[in-house]
Length: 119
Image (cartoon, rainbow, N blue to C red; front, side, top):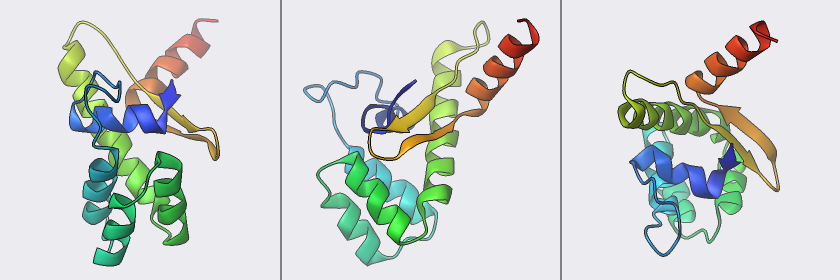
């Protein structure tokens, strides 16, 4: 479970999420927004955003938040699967201090389902 400002970096394969090591949050939001049909104005607004919450606000205003989050969650799951290999299951749950729970990857859903069945 992590804040979107940290975990968005996982979608690009950045696992050291400390800002001293790597950032790219805006660029990652831009790439996934463009894949989901965002126009140039939206992409420019995203790249100029100082925070992940501002990116979410822009995406919400343009009715792109849901598809972009789905795209990001899919990419995060792919990166987690590559990192953990066949021997372990991994997933991610995203939240924002401003917007609350944002979603979870397929792996997180599978882990939660298995946990609920065993309790």
